[in-house]
Image (cartoon, rainbow, N blue to C red):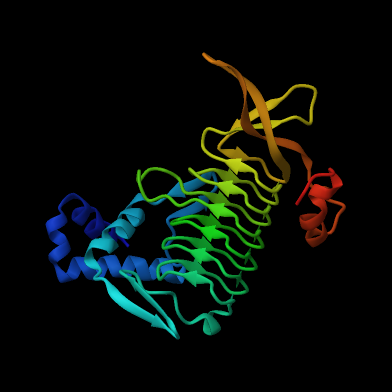
Length: 271
């Protein structure tokens, strides 16, 4: 690992090293590790999440050493630098046409990919459903037993290198057409209602108590979240600005699978 990291850091600082066969082998070794899940762009620690910047550097450096090639899949033709992921049967992954995952993305066993897209560097853990037209951006980290509903957009991040990727922790339910970008972290078993849009600057306001509590970039565990708005004054007048509202918590008395589908209905909002 030390040898790999040193080689990647050296090539990052001196791009002429990309011409060397050894450097190219090291870059491809990192990408293979990402593909197999033995390496991760970000990983959980006791104090939170650690971003492995050198692995992100390897992903960026992978592009210039790859050549454009024609990829044929049945009647379909693609032209790209990165091959498609392979060997789903051996991995125990269900892949519905026309789902696509790129080489360098980890997809664990018992994942279901409906027609969707998983980009390089992403990590999708076991038991997760990536539903129709959902996208998992580069380096995004998706936990176990997560449900990404139809049309969900999980943003990717390669640069700046120190930026944390989007993280969706175990058991979260992300409702239809939600957008989560810019390194936002969704806590364990949280539920996002349809059309919630979260960026690094989006206000996430807990309205369940006597006074609002504001978060940015993080949805606490088991929170039930819906789209909202607040009034902001500009030079031209006062206007409504989007935010997200935490309206409650998932009830522990409810069966896990049932609560994933019914948590929002309990608060009379749309899934």
